[in-house]
Length: 330
Image 1 (cartoon, rainbow, N blue to C red):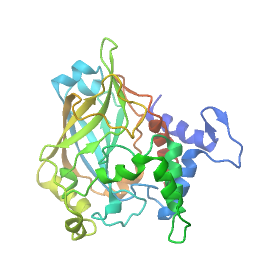
Image 2: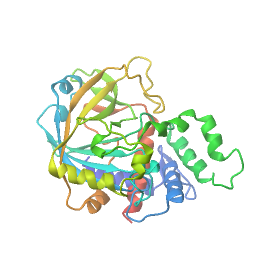
Image 3: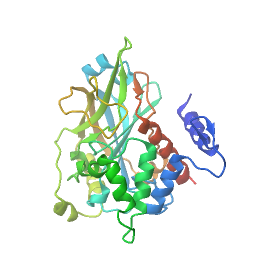
């Protein structure tokens, strides 16, 4: 199915309010719609912008696969020469004018769209968290809802305090992402597990890790607070115009017993990593704000040789992104 047709089918599915193949009564809404609704409550409705990670910048470059990649996956992405890539960096929250150095702008995100040789596309969505606060879309909705109901006048324990007590990772995940000196100097992690499939059908669960060739460089809260409101967005656009920015794209391989269906559980750093190739960014797009409006990055937009795992957050993210995309096109 062509990508444009797939996208329309996905959005039409929401218009028909179908969830897991079961019709929903007109007065009900899906978890994805409820999630976007509470984001709009927390950060306001900002027409033309994403419900989350609203502030961003788009740059372009290429991905060159490693020799090791072709041995672990039959994906065409790893079999041929370099392919073009469009990348959107972003701040967290649905606030288009959030200060880049604000703690609330963490985790910074990186979304990638690979233009494959056969004309198709493949998406990857990663961020600076080492693990996610919750394991399901329903839990993420409930976390946001708890935050929205925990203002200064909320009775103790507040809804968010109750949620954190029942979901320990929700209270610690945020601290794993810090403010960098540059978006080119931050490590981005795939908190969701995916599956590599080789030419013989062997399957290997993995998580992405994008490591800056220049090394990670993080700022203290005081240093971050002194930076300009849009220093990260401005700096990366300027940097790629002067010299290439490179990331090593790694696959952290799961071993027996590693959870692939729970993004709150990071795998040990001792797990083997395989070099998949190098991402090289070389230019900012002429009109980033206009370009990012049309971009939709879907974690399940894959190619033969890379598959989704049993992580329920992948589908939850796909549904929420589709709702957000549909609303910002209105």
